[in-house]
Length: 224
Ligand SMILES: C[S@@+](CC[C@H](N)C(=O)[O-])C[C@H]1O[C@@H](n2cnc3c(N)ncnc32)[C@H](O)[C@@H]1O
Image 1 (cartoon, rainbow, N blue to C red):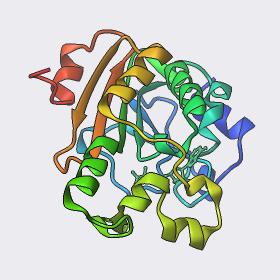
Image 2: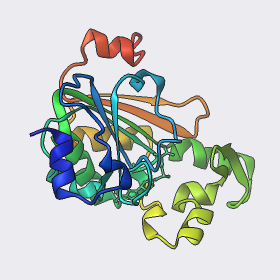
Image 3: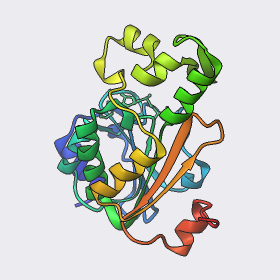
Image 4: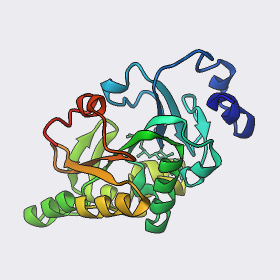
């Protein structure tokens, strides 16, 4: 059974589900964007030709799969070439992070990988302490507006207040080492961690098998 048919059968539908996302003959790679919010929030260009399914607990116009990511085990196994998860993993309690990562392993094909972006708590707290800034001072400007240290630690205050939804709160945080440990403990044997250029972000690439030359090229891991 095709993934999209299965999902449509067991999960809530968004209006977009009325239009088939993929033709039966679609052989493109597939990426599951976990906690993606909406498709105005861009994912990296190298996924441009891939099927892009967006999963979120918050139903919205672009959400293909409405699901709490702690329940990824309810999806069929080994359907995706990649899981993309940006600024979502900090929205779970530490013990639930392990559940979500186990779900990534479940939905990924054997040679699949996860790409994860989270705040870099070391970089954020170092700036906080080194500069003597106040906790509600602006740390940086994001596409969604100004971000304070408080926002990084506990979730974006404006969004939590306006939505009234607790799942917009942050419940944990990561350093490079703790993110590496979480991914390895979940069962990813090959993990690369990088700091993003602004030093307030971490990027992880986690593979079930040793990355192939084409994955290394796609992800620009040539020097890894
Ligand atoms: C800060 S936004 C990140 C959006 C986008 N990925 C980005 O990089 O800007 C966090 C997203 O995680 C989603 N989320 C929070 N808890 C979730 C859960 N338990 N399962 C799935 N998605 C969740 C929220 O609805 C929201 O869309």
